[in-house]
Length: 236
Image (cartoon, rainbow, N blue to C red):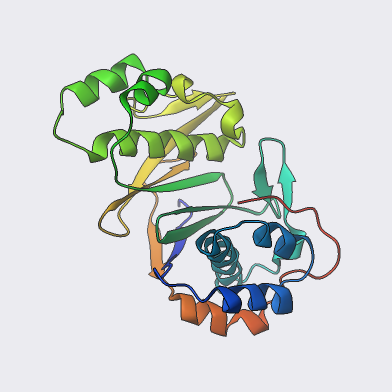
C-alpha cells in the first residue's frame, strides 16, 4: 500500500502585522532559524517562512513523528532534512504557503501563482517538447507555469535543486529518470489562481489535504519546541 501524502497549507493576508511576526520570531523561535527568517526585508517573506515551519511542525505532530525543527539540517543540494524515516518539503508563492510530508520515499513540492512568463526564459529552460506543447495551446496562460512548477518539484525531490538543470527535465513525459530512480509528478489543486505539483518516487498516491489558518498556527506556536540546542539550518 502506498504511503499517504500529507499536505497542509495556509494563506498569508495582504496586510501583515510586522511587529507581531517579528515578536513571535524573537520570543518563540530563538537562534539560527529566527536570524535567517529575520534577514528577509519583506514582512510577507518573513511571515511565509515562519508559516512554512509551523505547517511542518503541525504535520510532524499529527503523524506522531517525535521530531522538531531544531533537528533540521541541509544536505547537499540545499534540501532540508530531519530524519530518514520521512521526507518533507515546503514551498510558497504569492499568498500561499504549503508543506508536504510522506513517510518513506522522497518528496518535492512547488507552488506558483499563475502569471505570464517571458518567452526568452521559456526558450532557455524548457525542452523542445514543452515548447511545442505551449505553442499548441497559445491561449493557456497557466500551462507554462504548470511546466515550471513540475520541473521545480522534481528538482527538489531529487535533492539536487538548481544543480539539476531545468532543461534536463521533460515534463511532457509521464516520469523522469535520474540516478537510477524514477520520479513522478502529481498535480494538486489547492486554490484558484495557483498551480501546485508534488514529485515522488511513485504515482497514484492518496492526498490528505488540510487548510490551517495563520491565526491557528500562531495560537499553537507556544506549544512547539522549535529551536532548542544548536542546529544547522537552511532555507526551505
